[in-house]
Image (cartoon, rainbow, N blue to C red; front, side):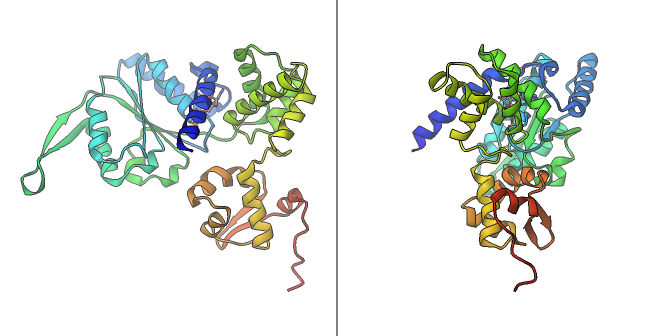
Length: 334
Ligand code: ADP
């Protein structure tokens, strides 16, 4: 199963890579972050110095990795990529850091998942451009300070709140990516269709954009599924009919909710009478980790007004009941 999964992931990644904007001006939407980042980068280039470390936060698929690549490209330097979960020991991070060349950008995805010792090593490296390499073991161990050339860390996290304050403070610039508007996603889709060399009717792009959960990664994925449908079951034209039919095959509903979103809403309404219910209970019920429910499903459901967060837990709104085609329990009947 693992091999199959990783192959599918690799294909997905390759398909994604082909559609990534390479420069800041190609990056659709996120005007505030783009403008701020552009200033940070231009100033650094003008001074001939490395820019401050950059933290990017926001739900998956909104462009954090893409921006990290763009930062390196705009600085005319190379990008090194790692992630919190990939770094098992502080020594792994020390090895990565000590191999960096001057001015390089180090992208650390899911930075909130770094283990504590690695995190501590990272503070020092970010602040003083130094790693302490420990040699020997036990009482005879000693730390040899190794100075590093200046570099820039770009950290990505699904929620900046998950980062310990000392680490958060080491970033001179924090950009928060928000869900994209349907109009912005339409531009992403039309741009991607152009890169794929296919023509898409405006109505089809519009239909896909409204069902992409405010997320460019999903918009691009749905575009590829619509292309499949048009090729195999249609006459090759990516029109509204093809878009609607493909979205139906892939069970994307009118709001763009996916299986996890619907599982969360369904559990909230049918198992817990609409709540309030605690996050961890809800996560166990849908068979996911709390962090996944909290950072992947919840932000969009909250934004769409389908669930609310209260001090006593998550609650379903009337819109959630309506979306599932259910009637909320009458509060007057016990
Ligand atoms: P994240 O790292 O936040 O999970 P990515 O940077 O991997 O997201 O983006 C996912 C996909 O969405 C990429 O293939 C990229 O092409 C596309 N994408 C993301 N943001 C934009 C954008 N602003 N404009 C165009 N395409 C985008």
